[in-house]
Length: 116
Image (cartoon, rainbow, N blue to C red; front, side, top):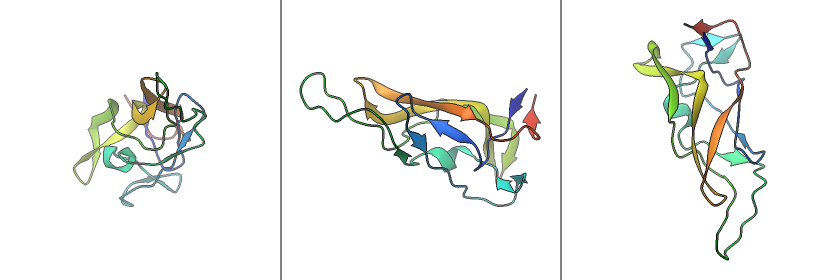
């Protein structure tokens, strides 16, 4: 069983950065927090990434934006026709270390709403 992600969830890059979450919908909430769909995470900003900017080969840069969602949307639960994200969600950022950073869920922030 996987927990539903909300604006109270914590998503992180592999270098200590945190994804800033906001929900585009307010119809479905868990513990007073709006549930997240894929569109809520795409383009979200990342702050606090510890990767330095280096131009010499191999170049590196800190994660600043979420660029993709690779796993996590579930067709079993939708809001406004969009699949809700679950705690197995992960994707890529725009960071280079030297490969793109992979964000992941550190905490769903709730355990009341789960999908099996």
